[in-house]
Image (cartoon, rainbow, N blue to C red; front, top):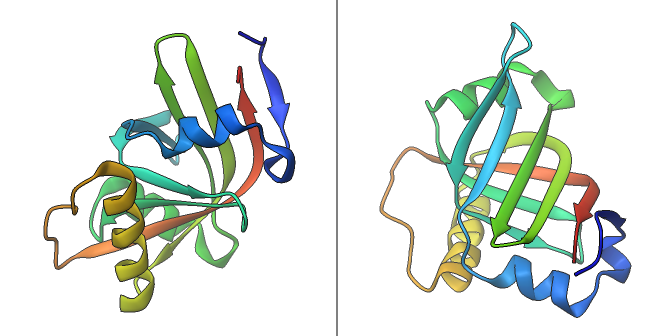
Length: 138
């Protein structure tokens, strides 16, 4: 297994791409107003072509409120997944999207990744992350 390194999404290895297609639970880290990390388990997807990760969330969740509070500039976040010795972290800027078409698209992507549709949630929003750095040992 390779050592930790920065990954260019446009040149990502087949192993890296396969890892982000496998149905792993991830952790999303946001930063509270007092500077402490808020880390929660999430389902997510990665669109390598656009450099966009998506996290399904509820409108009133702490993570969605934190991202929304950052305003139009978005909030710095980290999305990480681990399976045995394999790991990858996506760093980036998140914004909240609530457009029904965006939500439907993200739910379809999650269904493809996790093999089942997400639970129904009339308050669903999407945390859309523009990936600025990818780290991995793959």
